[in-house]
Structures are given as structure tokens and as C-alpha cells.
Length: 259
Image (tube, rainbow, N blue to C red):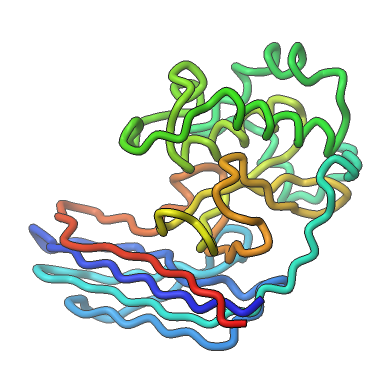
């Protein structure tokens, strides 16, 4: 499918600040970038750096006062989505070096504290069947509620509260999957049919020697996701990091199918 993407970020910077922006669609084999453009008003020169695991890119800038970024892209998503439960587990000793860190706990994903729960709840299952069961459990036991979490909320907090937004679902999915011994990383994405439209957080799991998308919220089809960045947790995939104070004026995300 061909998707048209537009993201507009309008902020007031209360002081001179450095900004790290990660809102550009990543060119990948299953999402072909036809054209895109990033324009920024109210900043100094832009400098791009490669994203985590070589996926996508981040853009550095210095900003002060009124600041506005606009990103537009046309992307062909050509993705075959396998039945998750049919995928086999990759043995840990066969994992590529870059995949191994995604077995470990991180700031927002306390996987080491969930090993007993993961074994008790999902231990009888293997591979993709186990991953699917984890995603189903999160969907059935966690309510999607706006405004119930913040930048300090971890997977452990979400597990206790049993509510959150896409970021929290992704953290919980990543945590339980790692606790079950399967590599998982958090993904920021544009999502076709997401309502209300916004930046979206999902998960990729490593099965059968490859990464596979999983969205425990079930709010958007995996076939219509366009990845921007990947990482250990929300720290690595934040669409904007401001090193100083700022105020939100307006923000919008639009994803429209063209074919």
C-alpha cells in the first residue's frame, strides 16, 4: 500500500535549547521511501546522525523562541505479515551480536523482575506461539487509557496499574518477551488507521532469524506501520528530545492511504 504521511510539531522554546528530532520514516526493505522532506523553522543548522541499529536517522539542531518542524513523506509498504504463532524460536547461541542486547533489561523494561511470572503464565509455549500469548494477555488485561502514564512510567508500573497508552503497552510487551528469553525491541512508527492519529509505539520480536512487528494495543494493522526508529525502550525512540524547557503549541500526525 502507498501511504502519505505528514507530521507537524509546533513548540515555543523558553530558552536556547538543543533538539534531537526523530520523525523521519526509515528506508527499509518492507517500506520503500518514494519521497520525503523535513523543514524546520526557528533553528540553526541541521546535522543528521544514524539511528539505533542503523535504522532511520536523528537530526540535531539548536532552537530558540518559536519553533516548527514539518515532515512529509510518501512510502510504499510492501510487507508480508506471517502468522506469529507459526514462527519458530531462534536459539540464543545463534543470535547475531546486535540482537543480544535486546534480551536484557533496560530502564523502562525491567525484564529481570518478570522471569517467574513469564514462566508461570507462558512457560508451556514455544516461539511465536509464546509471543502471541503474551500479546493477547496484555491486550486482555490492560486498558488503553489516555493520560494515565507519564515519562517516568515503567513496564512494572503499567503491570500494576493495568492501564496505559501505546508506549506502556510496548514496554510491557517488550519486558515480558525478554523475560521469556526472546529478544524484543521498541519501535516508533507512523500508523495507518490509528485513531486518534498520533505517533505510535509498537514492538519487534526476533523469531526465525528476523524481526517481526507486534502491536499489543491492536489499534492499527501491522500492514500499515511505517517505522521511524528502534531501541531498547522509549528513551531510544523518542520523536523529540529537548535539552531544556519548551511548551507545546500544536502537534498533529496524519497518515493517509493513496491506493
